[in-house]
Image (tube, rainbow, N blue to C red; front, side):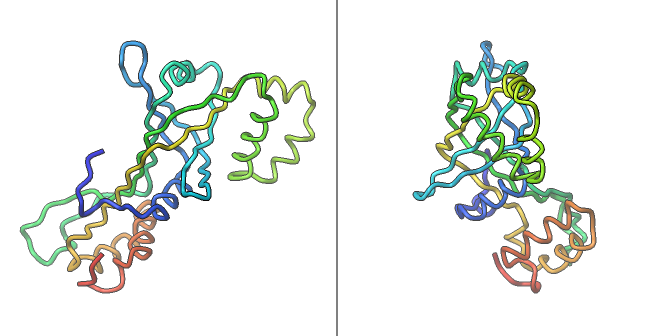
Length: 214
């Protein structure tokens, strides 16, 4: 993605937090004609001891995109965090223009499909995603009839996405510290997305007082 150096973050902890807080990703592949195809999928981030990233996910077997991953394993995954309009009324000067604030992470990945015969690995991946979003459901899943479980597992394709590189954008007007206090106050009193941006300003030290830098 295009990254203005002012808004680029190389902090892996910041990028990982965006991914974990906004797990619904856009998986982008290309079809046989080279045209893009997108699926929106929840993903789980694993970080190994050397800082390497792997994303875990699955999709419906009826979705032909898994065949694109099989044929062309390299793909793009994007995570978009809180985002909102920013009015120029946060500036003291009139000669300013509106913009849009956001946090986002893009990952270049290489896919490895989990073999359809490896029900245990697929089940383990599914339980990892359940633990992220609905831990109590794990007991219900285990209590279901084995034949039903097998049918449900057969209806999905699970995969691991090894992250080969990532980019992180944190566009919070870092270059205009004189507006940070007003911007934070506006976002903190706004919509859920705006409040999310206010929290990111706080985490990055952009919220305390006007004139404080990034």
